[in-house]
Amino acid sequence: MSAGTPGILLVLDGWGHAAAGEANALTAAATPYLDGLLATCPTVLADASGTAVGLLPGTVGNSEIGHMVIGAGRPIPYDSVLVQEEISSGRMRSNEALTEVLKGLAASGGALHLIGLCSDGMIHANVQHLQELLRIAAQFAVPRVRVHAITDGRDVADHTAAAYLGLVDTFFAEAGIGEVATVVGRGYALDKSGNLELTEKVSLAIVDGKGEAISEPQEALELTQRGDEWVPPCVVTSADGRPLGAVQDGDAILFTNFRSDRIQQLADDLHTWLAGRRVTFLSLAQYDTKASIPALVHRSDAGGGLATVLGAQGVRSVRIAEAEKFEHVTYYLNGRDSNVVPVEEHVRITGDRAPDYTVRPAMNIDRVTEAVISAARRDDVPLVVANLANIDVVGHTGHFDATRQAAEHTDRAVEAICGAAQATGRWVLLVGDHGNAEKMLTDATDGDGWPYGGHTTNPVPAVLVPAAGQKAATPAGPATLADIAPSVLALLGLAPEPRMTGRPLW
Ligand SMILES: O=C(O)[C@@H](CO)OP(=O)(O)O
Ligand SMILES: [Mn+2]
Ligand SMILES: [Mn+2]
Image (cartoon, rainbow, N blue to C red; front, side, top):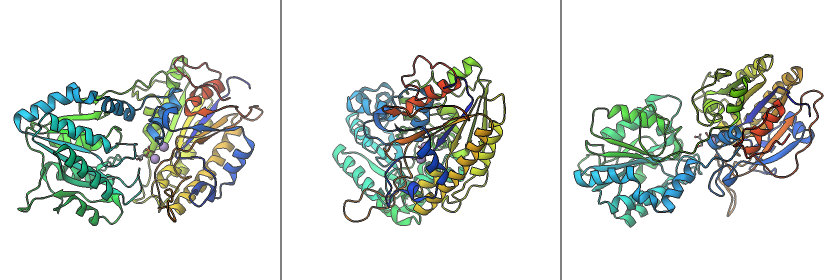
């Protein structure tokens, strides 16, 4: 292998590997170009879930941890794991930030508001964490706990919100404290696109008790036209029509998501709404909010990766993605470091946003492709990093045919990018960040599975398309996402960072 060849790292978001079958939208798609690459180029299946990347055993991968590990070259103990350790060990009971606030509520008579995603999809939150938080609140004699439940239907199968609300009820009964005050789908509460119209509806329900009035939490689920994700903001009201749980002065809010990217817009919005009011804010894990919100658990250091080497060596890279995945190829790939080194350029592709991705599975892939090709033509850019979002983003709709089409658009984009790479003397390293579209049905216990749009624990392909004349062998032995940064550096002729534990595959 000749050292020091420029290249393109292309993350195919949600590109997992599984045998062909009725659940697999990737093998159902007509993707002649990708099929050819998989058959002829050095390929390995890389582990992208569970402990291999820094998650709890058996946990599905996600874009944050996926891109962090691709960039860091080592597993990063993820926020979900750090929170879980605090809870399982019992240490959360003596967590200083938490106990101080709970003692204050017990003394003042204020309520604790728990706001978070109500499922065990393990990407943004784990509803099980509520159980321990309720027990701790009861132990500290907090007078009232109000749960503002965000229904999921994306990280877990749709139409499961009723079961999760039922589970939360059992936690209330066991702890002897807690009531659901509001219910809303994640489409509203976890918008991260900057659509404040959605977010403000949620804030209005939580702060002012304004929304669809319901007398039982489960009634909210009858009001959605588009599944659990789009349950409209609902407020549980008592017989006299008063909201059960609007936020009052002297209350405290604890956000229970462990992943920041989707809850932070709501957290900032609520913080702005409640500015000047006597309300304490806390979050279970550390958030990237504009407001400074104290976290109960602090995050792992994900630095010392690819970006550190590129910065130190003055190697220019261009990072390209659609808005949905822009932070992933920049902030997360750089180890959650927002300080951009001067040799790094960012291209955020915006464009028409379809209200529903099934309508436009191509998204803005043509513009991403053009940007990658024009960066590839530059002699001053040894490394282009891009994310093709379609397979994951459309896969999340749970719509098999649209996801198949997303894969077909991706195939054409990869062909165009690889063509440009050949013409400009570059290699292309294609890798998934976690599985998604290779499993579009839940496991069937009896009869057929249900449509499923969530991530998976399947391995992801890592494929090297060598530059013209470059030789590369198929790597032996197991691989993980931690091997990608050392591979990219080796291909560029650079040494890995000492903290990288992955190995160069090529
Ligand atoms: O959309 C998201 O927030 C998650 C799924 O909940 O997907 P990803 O990790 O790919 O961003
Ligand atoms: Mn992803
Ligand atoms: Mn996803």
